[in-house]
Length: 124
Image 1 (cartoon, rainbow, N blue to C red):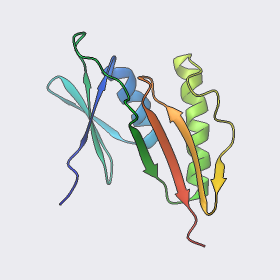
Image 2 (image 1 turned 90 degrees about the horizontal axis):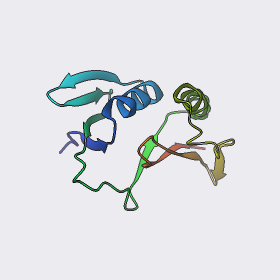
Image 3 (image 1 turned 45 degrees about the vertical axis):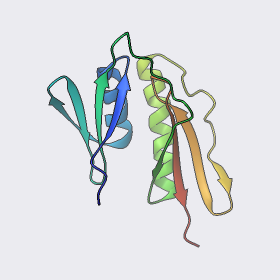
Image 4 (image 1 turned 45 degrees about the horizontal axis):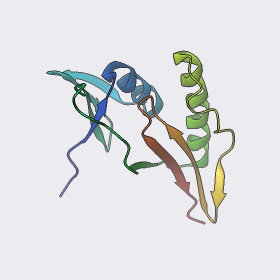
């Protein structure tokens, strides 16, 4: 069994898809009323939600694993650039990568307030 795709509802599908596309190096593709983001091992479908729908993070955390500590550090730099580019300091709290045991990680909030965790686990 394989995961098909993760559907993300957004107040602005264009901003969210550009944000994630740049951060995670995903290809964008228009699909009907949505934008599909394609990666090597993951796909997202980003849709706008109607004003009638209530979207909350309800404790959802999306965790993304990377292959090296260097990749994690590059992601931190991308987050800083994206905050500058969209003119918001959504993630001003990320300044260092945290470490617990052999795990290195940091958290961000996307433009819709969803929490993401990026992790590198050192195989030691």
